Length: 239
Image 1 (spheres, one colour):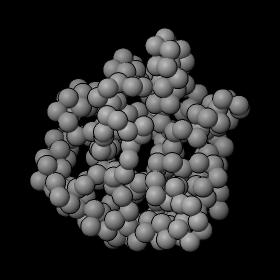
Image 2 (cartoon, rainbow, N blue to C red):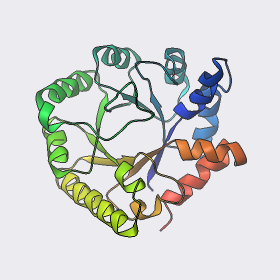
Image 3 (cartoon, rainbow, N blue to C red):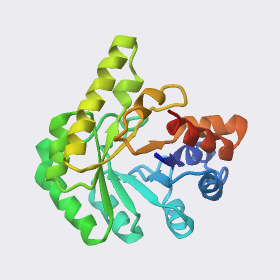
Image 4 (cartoon, helix red, strand yellow):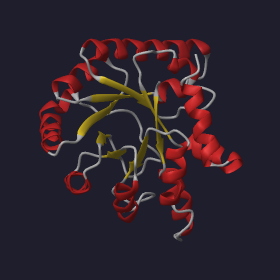
C-alpha cells in the first residue's frame, strides 16, 4: 500500500487571504487522517504566507499519524524543527518571491552543509528527507549527506507540454529512483501531482510515498475533504 501525505498549507492560504481565523487547517487534520492519509505535511515559510507557528504547535499535539515538516535549511527553521520535533523534516529550497517551491535542492554543491543538517536532526531522532530534482548526482549526494529519504520533485513532469516531453521526464524519474533504490534510500514523490497526472508515477513501484496538497484541497471545495483524500489514496494505489 503506497502512503499518502496530505499538505494542509493550502487551507491556511485561504485563511491568510483575509487574515482571519477561518478556514482553520487544524480542523481538517482529523478528517484527513480518518479518510486514510498516512501523514500530514506542513511547510512553514520565512514570510509565514500560509502556515503559522500556532498551526504547527497545535498540529504537533493532535496529529495521530505522522507530521512531515517542510522547511528551508535556515537557522530559524532548524530551531523550530528541533523544538517541535516532527516525525520527518523535508528540507526544501525557498525563495521569498516564488509562488510555490521551484525545483529541488542543490545537495551536490553543498554536501558538507547537508551532512551537518542531517546529523542535527538524527541526533533529535527526526527522519531526514531531501527534496531533489530527478538527477542521479543529487540522489547520490543525498545518500552521502546521510538522508533517510529523498522526495523526487515531479514539477518538470507535471509541467510537460507534450507526450514526448512527459515520457522523457518520467524516464528521468525512473533513473533517479533506480539509483535511490540501490542506495537503500526511502523514496517519495511530490509537487504538482493531480488526480489526472499521478497515474504514470504510481507505476514506479519503488516510490512508496506521495506528498500532495493543492489538488486535494481544490477537490475538497466540491466534495469535502474526506472524500477528496480517500479518492487520492485510492488513485495512488490503483494498478
